[in-house]
Every structure is written in C-alpha cells, then in structure tokens.
Amino acid sequence: MVRKVELHQGAAEDLNVSFEKLMMLGVCDRSGGKVKMEGGVITDWKDIPMELLLQIVSIVDDQTVIMASGVCRGWRDAISLGLTHLSLSWCNKNMNNLVLSLAPKFTKLQTLILRQDKPQLEDNAVEAIANFCHDLQILDLSKSFKLSDASLYALARGCQNLTKLNISGCPAFSDVALAHLASCCRNLKVFNLCGCVKTATDRALQAIGRYCNQLQSLNLGWCDNVSDVGVMSLAYGCPDLRTVDLCGCVLITDDSVIALANRCVHLRSLGLYYCQNITDKAMYSLAQSRVKNKPETWDDEEGLKTLNISQCTALTPPAVQAVCDTFPSLHTCSGRHSLIMSGCLNLTSVHCACAFQAQFRSPTMLPPSAH
Image (cartoon, rainbow, N blue to C red; front, side, top):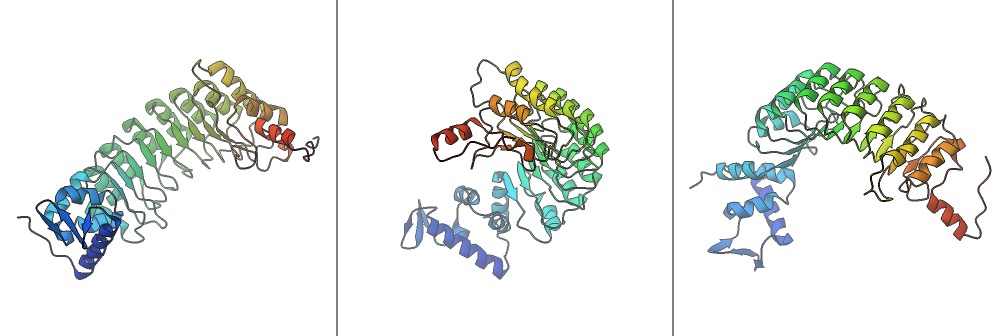
C-alpha cells in the first residue's frame, strides 16, 4: 500500500476541482457522474490508477501536474518517470525555489521552459537542473538577468544533450563561458542569443562554428559586437543553417551575407534589419547562390522564404528585385509580406510576381509610379 502524504486543504480542494473538470472533459466514459473502470468505480482523484494518472498528466496544465506530484510517493514516482515536458513560465514569484525542489524529482525532463517576466532564476537553480536533468534537450532561460557564467558552465557539464537553448536577454554571460558551452553542447540546432551583447562576440561565434556543426537556427538580434569575422566562421562551420537573424548587427558588411549565401545552401530566413553596411553586392550574391547551389531536387518553394532588409538604405530596386524574382516564396503583396522593406522608401517599386499579376487583373489599378 502506497503511503499518502497529507495535502493542505486548499491543495486537496484544487485537485478535486481539477478531477471534476477532467470528468466533464470526458477523459473516461461517464455514468451517473462516476467514471467506470474495470473492477471498480472512480469517484475521487485518490482512486485514479497509475496508467490513467499518466494520461491525465499529459493533458492538464503544469500547475496541476506539480500539485499531483505531491499527493503521495507513488504519484510522485509515476509522474517523475513519465513527465518529459514542463513549463514554469506561469510562476510569477518563487520560481527559483520551485526549480530547486522539482529538479531532483523530474529527472526525465526533455523540455523545460523557464521564461520570466521579471528576473527570478539564480545560478543555484540552473546548477540543480544540470545536476539532475541530464536528458534535457530544450531549455528556455530567456530574460534571466540574475544568471552568471556559473550557469553556462553548469549546463556545459550536465546538459550536453541540449538541442535548443534560449538565453536571449541574459546580459551577464561572457563570451568565454559561451565558447566553453559550445565546446561541450555540440548537438545544438537552435540557439537564441538575441540581446546578448556581451556574450555574442566574434570569439564566441568562432567557437560555435567550430563545435556546433548541426546548428540550424541562430538569433543574434541586436548583438552589435558581431562582425564579419564571427558570421563567416558560422557560415563555414555550420553549413546547415536555415534561419539567421542578424538584425541590429551594425558592424557586418556584404562579406557576411556572401558567406551565408555561398555556404549555407538551405538558408530559408535571413534578418538584416538596420544592417546599413549591406549593399547591392550582398543582394546579387543571394540571387546568384540560387543558381549555383540549387540541387536538382529543389522545386520553386525551396530557397529563401523570409528576408528582412528594413532600414538597409543603401540598397537599390534592381538588386532587391533580382532577389525577389529569384526566390518565388518572397512576397511583397498584401497579407503575405515575407520580403520586409520597412523604412526603405527607395524600394517601393520592388514587387513580387503575384503583386504584378494582381495589378494586371485589376483594370482600375494604375501603374506604379516611376522612381
């Protein structure tokens, strides 16, 4: 017989409410307000067998899951073995203590979301995650202002199976710590470093290019210490890159775009917002890469699907039109904007093919003004 741990009255009432809601949702067949099971009838959440418990855990919110794990040792053990995804982003206070208490229990976690509206997490919580959650693959620590390099070193030691890591808005990490993390977490495919000005330097990007060869998506938005040296290292070391956000990376030039165009043949999304050193040379390199890199198996839907060149004021209409004509998935038409050109008043004559077709179908539409 499993020994039950007494819940405080409020928690028990909450579980009863959750149980009633689940019955209304029809988790099992109902008859007269009772859930019939083989060999008996469930009338209370305490009677739920382990198999059904794990089914319930898979559909209820994370707060209920945590509450259920405190009912008894049997429930805790069952949930800890079956729970692989958990989000604590709803926790507005005491998230750090909650992580410290849950990490030793939920050792099979593969996804952990700890996004915060206000900073709560501290290094000891991340160290607990690294000590107990060795199967972790997806981790979101965005806006964790209190974390230091100790957290990155802990993850490098204990969470080497990470494939997706979000540390956007974490200002205190150093590029040395990030380089060490990259050398240990070599399975990373998605990495968000948006706003990590101190962290995302050329030195760190060179380490990512050297060790994280499976990388497919990298967000370097507003990392204004990044230069061509770092981006070119990524392009040569991470040929499978598909999504690259360089918005606000004001130091980069055409050389970065040329390297990405030539080396990353699967590139689907490129953000260059406010990269004002970008010129027509970069645009023509993108267009030419389609011809040079196009495998025989590609169809018209392959290639760039999103391109943000807003505030790239040095670009001219012929160069941007060449890119638009080369990649059929780039659209300027209403409702399908995937070629984003905000703030580029000299590019108003650039249109995708379907925009031209719509113009010819409408007899009332006037031809575009000459520029």
